[in-house]
Image (cartoon, rainbow, N blue to C red; front, side, top):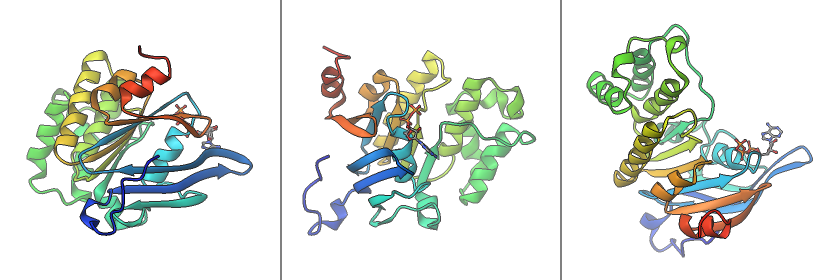
Length: 240
Ligand SMILES: Nc1ncnc2c1ncn2[C@@H]1O[C@H](COP(=O)(O)OP(=O)(O)OP(=O)(O)O)[C@@H](O)[C@H]1O
């Protein structure tokens, strides 16, 4: 993937996220071949590929939840690690599995996140996020009584209730109905407009087309196409 030029003279232009030669093996199995990726504030890159192509592996490395077995992964010039409080403070992650506390309400989940991140005026902000994700009527519900799409909206809400400079999402469209998918695209466009860098894995070409500046297609852990979404989808034979 093309590096974005020499930023040693312009450190302010350095990408927020910089991966260089990042690869991951599990024993003998190579989940991710060496890859370069730069992500700037206010831009979105979408990873696209079949099951097992390496998208989640790359996202886990980019968010500091996993360590590459080769190469370097930097966030704001420092190694990306979830052990780093600055990374935890600035990188929000929406994973591909729903993990909730069965005895905490929707609002209480968001309060936990807001308190952990010392969010000012948390209750008003939580009200805003609940309304934004169409969860206001479920604020007092326990996770066990939510639909799968509402649980996915709660995952998204938990990322929105906290500060973030980088938002990493693993198939955020899953479990959402068509209306909610449209609102997801609007949400991600709003994140970019607010200067957040967005990195997502998706199986939905329309979502990538709507919000991504770049698309990276993966197959068996290798980049097989990259560029503007329309070009990549055309190269994959998914668009004319
Ligand atoms: N912890 C692990 N141990 C061993 N192999 C793993 C592990 N995690 C991922 N893999 C392997 O790495 C490869 C890439 O997996 P990954 O989860 O990154 O794919 P993906 O593109 O996110 O797939 P999906 O669309 O199904 O979520 C797969 O072959 C998978 O079996």
